[in-house]
Length: 135
Image (cartoon, one colour):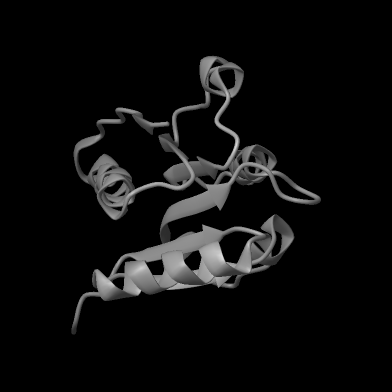
């Protein structure tokens, strides 16, 4: 039986960013799903199969940080990469939580995102959790 590819979920209200990130993830060999809002992602029937979440911090309605907190409250431990067009040291300094594996300022490079994704996927296999910060 073939092993399923890791599923990367992208949550961003910016359609071009969302679709570009989804395309990049698929071109790198991952399964990828994209969502325009946190609420849409929370209704995703394969939430528990998500290996890594890439989410914008600033979105209408529920923010990326609020989405992460909701997942924790639901008992879902999904390694998360936060992305933002407005990097803020205060957000970073607040202590983002154990499942936050990356914090990237837009625009970010493919290699920076890939480094975060690899960190997220490795987290499950070796228990390490170093924040990749590329703002």
